[in-house]
Length: 116
Image 1 (cartoon, rainbow, N blue to C red):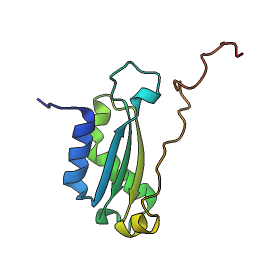
Image 2 (image 1 turned 135 degrees about the vertical axis):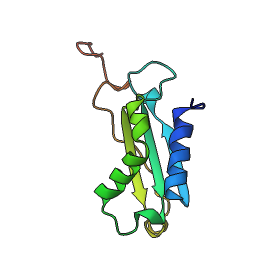
Image 3 (image 1 turned 30 degrees about the vertical axis):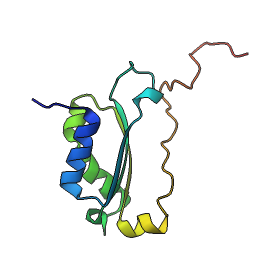
Image 4 (image 1 turned 60 degrees about the vertical axis):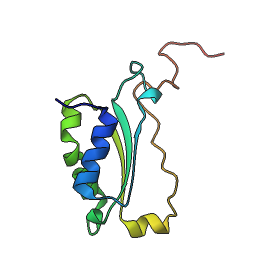
């Protein structure tokens, strides 16, 4: 039986699989129309030599393969930024923001709601 949060599970699996020099895993579920305490929407930033020579698509596939079990267990969305240490250094650890939710963000008005 697995204990801990989905965030801890994702973090641990990525660390073991990719040996990152930098990693951030953020639960962004609070920004979506899901119950309080949900662990359905995450953002990950992974900086690893394991991505050297891989296309952006192959990097994303690698991350998704690592967390495949979490998708089966209710993970709905994963925003990924996968970089090599050289790329990370060149960008100076640039800010990483997730795209706006297009499927019921808490910031979006309710369907049929009147504004103003």
